[in-house]
Amino acid sequence: MAKKKSKQSNSNTIALNKKARHNYTLTDKFEAGMSLQGWEIKSIRSGKVNISDCYVFIKNGEAYLVGSEIMPLNAASSHVVCDPNRDRKLLLNRRELDRIAGAVDREGYSLIATAMYWKQCWVKLEFYLGKGKKAHDKRADIKDREWAVDKSRVMKNKNLGKG
Image 1 (cartoon, helix red, strand yellow):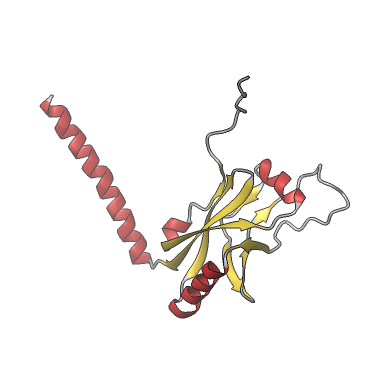
Image 2: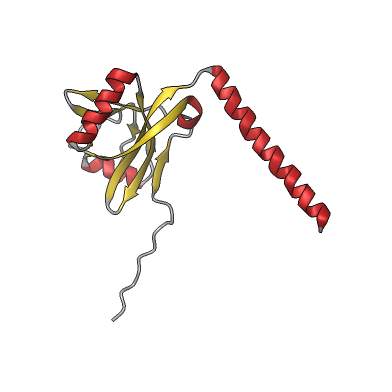
């Protein structure tokens, strides 16, 4: 007897921080689980998440996500006090926590959350070690991106002319 595959969306992404790559130079990538409450999972499933202004910080040897907003559903339990902006604990190995804490303390890195997604039945947060970009760095990136687009147009037109 064959098993039926359930219909799932192709993308497991819940929320993205699109400004992160523009505002920061990102280096090392980390993935962490999150300690969430039941009403938060329900809200995440309905897509009521914003991580555009959030960051990760280390306090007492633990990592926390600060500034993320998970709006509660109206149909959620009325006996639970819902705080949409609470600090959420991230679940990382001790070795990863020590490495992150060292980079933040000694080298002046920031921890920038870039994506929240489903990994099987778990909510995961992707974050990077990064340093803030100056205005001239941002302009250089924009210039490089525009040149890549122009170069591809020129090459496309050049290839069309041969045919």
